[in-house]
Amino acid sequence: MKKKYVSKIVFALIIAVFIICCMINAPVSSAVGTLWSLLPPIVAIGLALITKEVYSSLFIGVLTGGCLYAITEHSGFSGVFNAVVKEGIIANVADAYNVGILLFLVVLGTIVVLMNKAGGSRAYGEWASKHIKTRAGACLSTFLLGVLIFVDDYFNCLTVGSVMRPITDKHNVSRSKLAYLIDATAAPVCIIAPISSWAAAVAGTVDGVNGISLFIRTIPYNLYALLTMFMVVFIAMSDVDYGPMKHHENNARNGDLFTTRNKVYPEDAKPMHTRGKVIDLILPVVLLISLCVLGMVYTGGLFDGVGFMDAFANCDASFGLAVGSLGALIVIILYFLARRVLTFTECMDSIADGFKQMVPAILILTFAWTLKTMTGLLQAGEYVSGVVERTDTMVLLPMLLFVVALGLAFATGTSWGTFGILIPIVTGVFSKELLGIGDSASIPPMVIICISACLAGAVCGDHCSPISDTTIMASTGAQCDHVNHVSTQLPYALTVAAVCAVGYLLAGFVQNVFVVLGVSFLMMVGVLVLIRILSGMKKTAPKE
Image 1 (cartoon, rainbow, N blue to C red):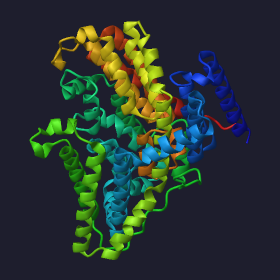
Image 2: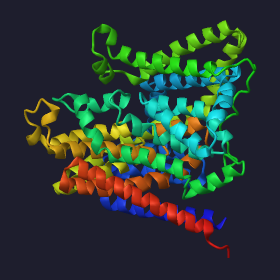
Image 3: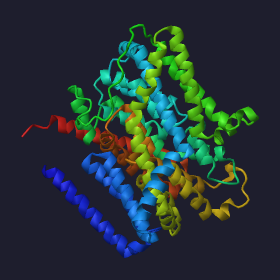
Image 4: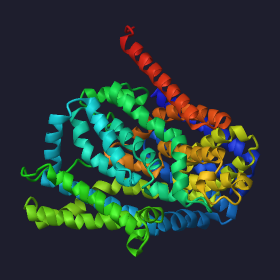
């Protein structure tokens, strides 16, 4: 109880100090475009971490943003309702891109239920138990599957989670650890994969050069993505954990996969038939991946004569995933009917069951999207970008951009929105150097480093943020309590972030990819070895 009171008092003091700083910066009647714009996400994130209750925390954050906006606009109570309900919840639920993601969620939930009912997941679990015999093997298999599904982070999180849950459960890997493994190989993999929805998003932020070619040049300098993947492999092989994750993993070894009892996800559907085979899981997953990729390039104009890479660069990820997953669902139902593993009634019942599986994710996503709308109305991005533009120390710019991108993505929960704001600022700062350049190969290294720092910081902030879509999807895929996932993952993400900040500081002076990568990896190894040694010392320390 004492810890709970201390954390609440500390949070109240932080909010009080922040509000005082806001009042010094600008009056509350001028909250738009000032430090006040960061208050709603800080309230939501802080409450979520302290109360362990996501829905109410997000809603209070949304309400805070609505009140600030109404005060600024002098619109009273009606302005609060207009901002929160009409411009927030209703607008986000009605948004075509968001609806596509929600449809994809429901369809994927249905496919998972179908595979479980048919016995495919059970058969795959039995097969995997003969080949994956250790905790390290289960963790590494999760990582490798995440690397293979590099097309889209949403798709990555949900597919890897549904496939690997039975295997990690069998080896007593906590749901929090599974959520971390999923999250650490979703956005970090997509941000260094040229054929992905993320590459398409980045390619569209810089005018006048080949966007995909520019994106490829940023990959070696994307320290957060590369070091995070390295850290995942190290932790999986060494079985070393620290922070809250260690507590969750110790409990999992004793049979408690969840640690806290506030489970918000229903149990997986029990197999209805024992005739299920491994192919009943493998084939639906392969179909889903293939048709989702096809759906994405279709939306990019592949069948209208556009090249494959250009089709990816111009794709509508939401529409493509919705089309691809719906097509896959129809084929999968026909397949199970033809195999006579499920009846037509059982297949139709799975649609409602799949929707129920995804209700927690849909609720959290809706509130998170609404909170982003509030920060948008308050122009949080413009405020942060103005702070960046006032920076005149060029050698420190990569590190500062990384830190600012991390903070902005953490507060707003969007990595795409973060690099969409910051990359144009970078190109504006280097406008003279970029003048007349049509070939990305001619862009100066410092520009590439700064763009990479924006991307790395955005992914890091997205990785840490409780209101990030990807973080929510990772919790959903692992069927892990969302706050548990955030609190256990945060120390790991911040460890990598600290090494990255030093790496980008070095990059500002050296501007040599081999030196920067080499030193960064050596620092990461040193930090991880030190953590392992300290962890071993705690295990062997005598009890008092």
